[in-house]
Image 1 (cartoon, rainbow, N blue to C red):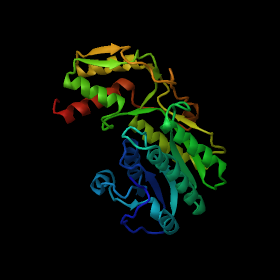
Image 2 (tube, helix red, strand yellow):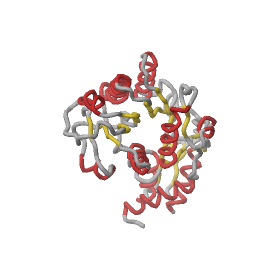
Image 3 (spheres, helix red, strand yellow):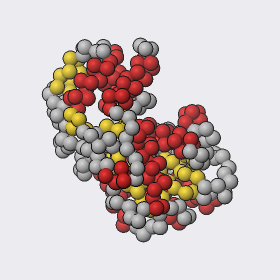
Image 4 (cartoon, rainbow, N blue to C red):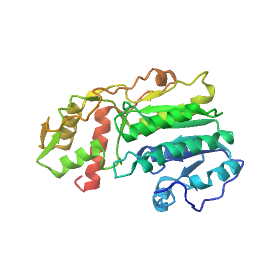
Length: 306
């Protein structure tokens, strides 16, 4: 897996400002791309050399593809207004520590340096709200921030502590779609932790809209906080969310709360402080029950049960 290989790209008008997005085919990335394109913004996707071009054409109206290997040349040729870094390696697919570091540390640092050299004004980094030391993924995100803040760059770094994103089209392995698929298949039981940990879930449409709100606001802000929380501002026990999903699916699955132990260092509450975002005029629009209902219906349709 590599960000630094060669890939054919579509030529750009050097005078036209663009927004560069990493992770454009990911869950959050593709929603950000669509929101940017809907606003009339020209979007460039930074991709791996082995990326599926057909998948990108389904996300982008007019695909423009760069790799990290040609970034310096492309930044010199094209006025990049901003970078939005959503590409993330969680380590869930057997990635080595080096592969996690390449995506979460090496890639954004090289882009930040390149952006600064070529006059890009804004760099939005999608960070995690999880606490330090939980796993290699969190460690890599913290290392990028420490390294980025130690460098003297002219580009404004906006660090977004994103809470748990959900919505139709999410990756099947993630918590909510995995549960929905289990319920729709009629599995007899699901082993779970006690479910007392409280989590803040934000609908992907609200998350994408929040990122664009920040992107637009950066130039007018007198100062940028060290980190900006983005979530719903509400945290419910996971047990309540699991029960709500089971009801929405019409399932009778036995929920075996307490069958699994909590992870070492697992936080018992994650909740976004929305004070800064509401000050910009942003607030979440999709309520949790509405968003979960949409997600269940999407999964039901995909499964052929709707």
